Image 1 (tube, rainbow, N blue to C red):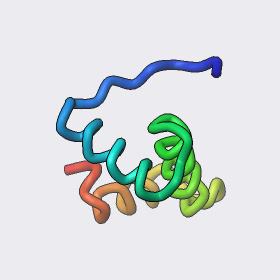
Image 2 (spheres, rainbow, N blue to C red; image 1 turned 45 degrees about the vertical axis):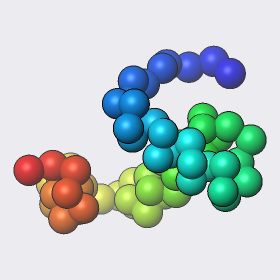
Image 3 (cartoon, rainbow, N blue to C red; image 1 turned 135 degrees about the horizontal axis):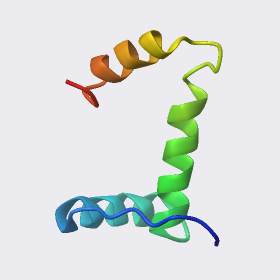
Length: 63
């Protein structure tokens, strides 16, 4: 797989690994990729930057 690596805290990685195993994914990377694609698809490309920021704030990703 080509791409960038993302660092996660050990506790978060362990949780992600547990969920990916239970859900039947072949790897943590496959699970994370699926989750990110799903989340990003919920954000319509036609949304303005301000609308995207409001959504991310509502989800707790931005303060």
